[in-house]
Image (cartoon, rainbow, N blue to C red):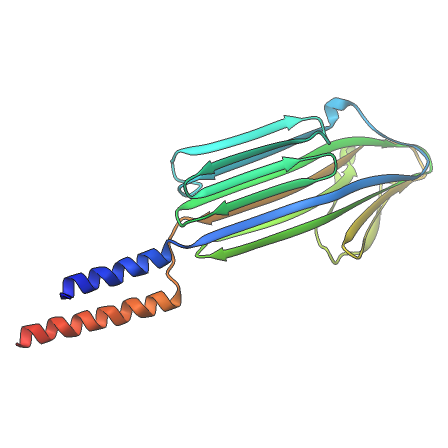
Length: 249
């Protein structure tokens, strides 16, 4: 085999290995439910309840002008819907249901990026001496090989919209309680289930509820594995030795 052909073979092998870079990230919020422990509770105004979702996949970086396939949705909270997009090097999907939110992105080969989110938004009232408890499960998973960056998370928040006070639960190990504007917020975890309770001695209207899952991955560059780099360097060293020997002869 000539030096030229040998070097070309080594380069092809390295690029083939690098092109196998993949990423897959998912985030979900499932088994969402709530119970009225005492007093009165009610969702307010259908216009104040909605879901939204968005999925975008691209065969280039997010911030580089490129063909982008995208899909989104909007509707009444707890309806069931989904959105998905697929390009050569990127796949994104998001779904909402009566008790779940899910987002998933995958880049099956280097050169793609993807983003997906699904969320609920709502407002509710509490009567005098009322308490309501929300519960849910959440999960994130993912794997990277050559990815420049990826993330996945879920979050649930409650608050007094008029006072711009919001309390978000985003730490699976957090157990805490606080009082703001006469409303007691308590967050805790039991097993793999998360809980949040809101209670008040006075009637409270138009409290905020927000839940969201979000994921993203960016696999725009082929990153050779250490073994591939070692093979490439060894091949180049051999190619250099053979070329030098030919010149000496």
